[in-house]
Image (cartoon, rainbow over all chains, first blue to last red; front, side, top):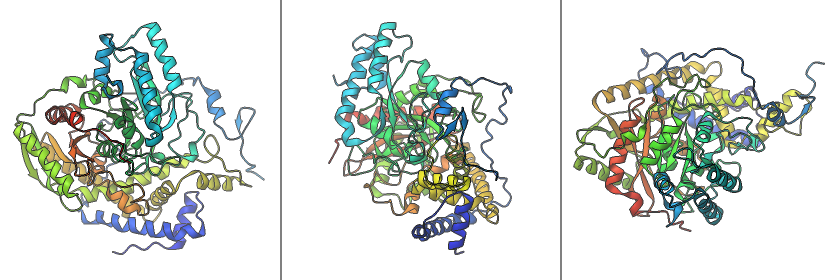
Length: 97
Length: 485
């Protein structure tokens, strides 16, 4: 089966992923995606109808620990990494009008 | 004596016999970095000054552990408290880790000394380290070729004797392929053996941290420090602590080694194939039972890998939004623009390509056709490996279809770059352990890597198989990187 990805689809996907794509890059991303998806079609050659999906790894399942609160001792560094802050809070543009 | 040529177990011996001091060792590495880094470009940050201070402190206090004072290099996607962890991305160019990864805590307990953070493909996405936002690392065997990736800085630094060993991470071959390209030893542990806490996530169901070393003995020593359950990583397995160095026995008599013929077919370079065939003959002479069999999973695994890894990456990298940490654009008027512009300016082209692919395969209308299907193929690949491991102790393949390729030769063709991972990704898909060791050089004196794959948590078996081969061919005694210009 030939995989076809349209320009509109690329723009839709980029929007879902919160990415801008420049007009001159669209064609390249479209071609790359189409080529990779075309290659990925090979998965259809395996008969997997009867198989379950592997979700993560199940070698050891549900490794539990106690749900306890631990104080994180280096809060200053967390705030120091923030691009913009005010009074120990992350600063964002106005969201509600 | 050239200190930087020694393996860690040799350094340990000299420290114990008091033939060397910690300061002498760290100073030798500082000098070597000074001499070779300009050409190799393996480091994103160099800590030699702090390392020398630490060396002095350890000497004053006395060496409290058998590895106290041994230097190490760290891939720059593993968090080291108070230091930069950039993932070779503009997105994290100024990010300072507020905490240590669990593996770093383990190294600090043993008093190892970090020499710095090592270059990689941005967010570990790539097989050549050319996707680093900051610099291109060169392969010490030939400076016109890539060191492999994504742990290319780690492998190149070990090969160039700028660090005695290093930490890498492996999502689809990112420890093994650069180890093969640089003629060193790289081990990808079983999924869950090593904690991922503090490793910047790429594809969480595939990522594992592991050692890149000069020889198999060092690989076992470093694995001893890394392995073990960690309650901060819910996928880390509750397996008993082992001493992997006990597996270093020179014996493969009666060992059943399976050789999957599909891994030696189309696309595998003739000289690589020849070297592997020689290795197989060596194993036969050492008394191993070799059998060729069919394991037709490589191309299905590769397709499933790129679907799953990109899907997980698109989700994991959603956290980079320019709010709490990381790059924030200067150009925005509202929140949506802040998100979009920060991400678009902060990520490089390959990272964006994978986010787009991952978002596509998870999007409504395509989820069943791609993602769900890939997860089923994953089960198929596991089942095929399980069947093979009913008959064999170890599976032997090339690590990479070729030796190190020229810088810039595959940059414009993402699919061709992905195909270079054909021999390694199925191991991550199935969560198995595998080691890459050098098995010779081609006619251009470039190293060829051999991959030995084991059953889940059978690191000891592959270490023993690798060790026996290494002791027989003595690669390090015969060949060394020449920094060809």
